[in-house]
Image 1: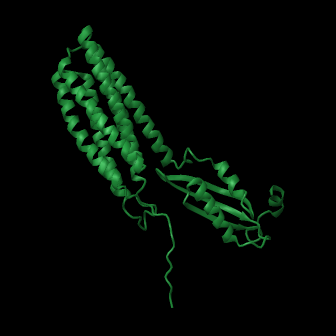
Image 2: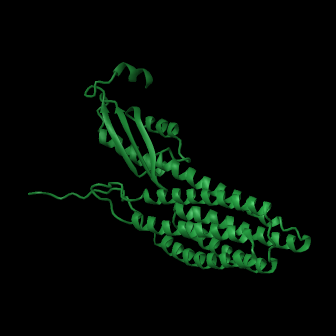
Image 3: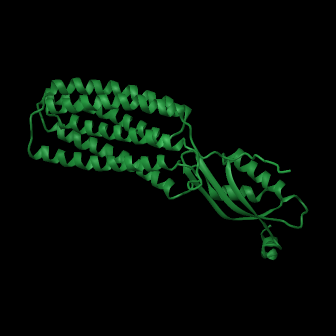
Amino acid sequence: MQRNYYFHHVEHRKLQKSSKKTLWASLIITLFFTIVEFAGGILSNSLALLSDSFHMLSDVIALGLSMVAIYFASRKPTAKYTFGYLRFEIIAAFLNGLALAIISIWIFYEAIMRIIYPKPVESGLMLVIATIGLIVNIVLTIILMRSLKSENNINIQSALWHFIGDLLNSVGVILAVVLIYFTGIQMIDPILSMVIAVVILRGGYKIMRNAVSILMESVPEHLDTDEIMDDMKRVDQVLDVHEFHLWSITTAHYSLSAHVVLDSKSGHDAYETINKLERLLKEKYGLSHTTLQIEHLEMNHLDEAYFEEIK
């Protein structure tokens, strides 16, 4: 009679319902204000508003990519994609950061051209649009911060960083309007645009750096491989740990694999020791997806004298 066994395993997908709702709300609000800000920038002849509208457009694109990423991340693994589609959100985040870097360079170029060929700015309309933008960005920042408390998502994190930057940009535009009104110096507008470009470039670089770190399968920043290996070696019957690999599949989804050399003369159950190691890794370091290969001193032709020396 054939028996069917069902074993617990880590599910390589994210069902992020809260993130979906947050991104839909953010996408609709951002798209609406992008149109308003772009129209206001043209009517007021403000490069600062136009620059920020393109920044907002990049946020719309980023939020759209994030929606697609969350959709794919919720799909089950397949025979070909055994880790599922979790990496799609990292690719989306990288593209988002790259778009921000390109936009920032364009804004910087336009600001230089505006300094060379200055144009008058309608400060009244500029103030109205900037004030609306400030309110919108405060609302979006609050929405995203609440979402992050319930679900960790790199795209939500990047969107939050952008909207905090947008919020500061709105404050800067309002300040620029006041300065233009009282001083009459039109040069303040392109100078502010250059500051906005630097802020955007910094945000794009930070997002790309984090995405590349995951794509390169580096060790998560909050984990220390030496500390983890030392703790594993302190478990009874463990002689050595090597072929150690620790990486992120996506945000908050980590994997660990290692070869564990056990004392074959102790008489202890090897699988009991492995279970102790798995409990240690899960409870102390939050590593649920672990693959540990047992190595036997005699069967694997290992140097017993060496392991006796390091015990």
